[in-house]
Length: 160
Image 1 (tube, rainbow, N blue to C red):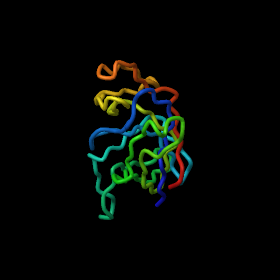
Image 2 (tube, rainbow, N blue to C red):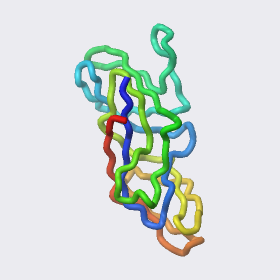
Image 3 (cartoon, one colour):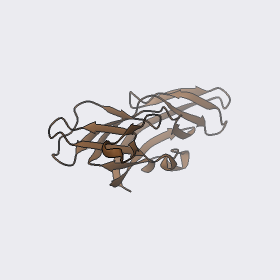
Image 4 (cartoon, rainbow, N blue to C red):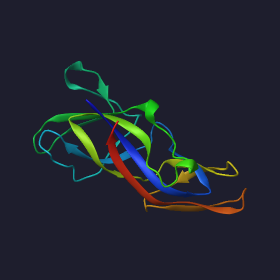
């Protein structure tokens, strides 16, 4: 069992508290089997909302997958208490957003998509539909009368 943190780095313009919203938020990952080294071709998502029983009654995991190459069953859990917002103070620095508990797999790529929320840095106005699929997001904060945006998004995985 290995704990791996997903760290994010971005430029935040007049925006703060970028975070996933709800237990149904989907973390889209590409996973590598630690048994044979196979990397999944397709994106797989993991969410707090879904839990699958493990073979042999050893508990549950948020994602259970079988390696197509070696047939090994691997699993991954989201550590709910590890989920943290990315704030304006963190801009252009890598910060941990979530930690995954991995058994037999490790994440090798992350695709930020939909389901994020954020707040205007000055106004506190909540932006409910922050979509990062294109690698950036722009909007306008009516309360503060200024543009807001998230650009230059990067990520990395580190052992936690």
